[in-house]
Length: 360
Image (cartoon, rainbow, N blue to C red; front, top):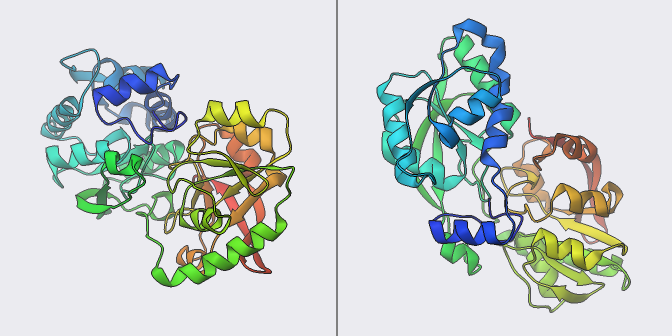
């Protein structure tokens, strides 16, 4: 929920209140509705059990389905304790598949509650999602669930639940750790991979990419620079103070703003000429929609598709194994607008062409 306002997550009630004060709006329920709508084709063969109100019932009804409510949150604003209690209750009801919407913190809560006793599937709705238990998009989660339930729940595998410390994350310290495993449907490319860190050997390639971008920069253009080590190398070569995990803004080669929110970006660029500089998440291939929600559909439309500059080392491209780069902005029209082929800067005077698609 805190992504567009630059909070990098909302674990804990204080951060949730701060996000709301900054104008953030909840997104889990809307994304859950998109996923659940895919289940309608199962008809009367489907039975849905859920917790009440915002913990599942509202999204299920909004998706046109009729759930059986098996419990309710103890307070109007649900907590991780409610998530764990709901997971235990549903697991105890012998469900074939337990779906949950959120990010890495939610996956961790589900793991703490039920381990690998029930097959689970995450609907991506968090800011930081490094765990491999989520589908690449909400619609993809619904398609996986419908197929899995229709064929009799026969193919599953263990997938990593990863987690990072949000306080460290806000201090520009990113240290992921394996927290555990959940049992998930084996659905191939519809499932996102866990994030892969950049190898130390990538540094020279990142510096070559930075040199190419700096040579292309125009002093009159605003550059919205996304998170990631490749983009961070660019900012280091510009000799400006930047954020590793936030979204920064330069005018030409000079820093204008650091770790900006969606509102701050739009307010600053106004009607000026601007360019969006992005690097995909290693291993996952996500270009937009994971950890950079400040770059919203409104920002993307303001910049324009032809002003997006993608930076990636050949090692990062090779790690995708031919899979396309992904976007999941929460706006299907924007995802469709972004889909297509792009020039990707891979070094100094080096580039390749690569395909970008909406989350599968």
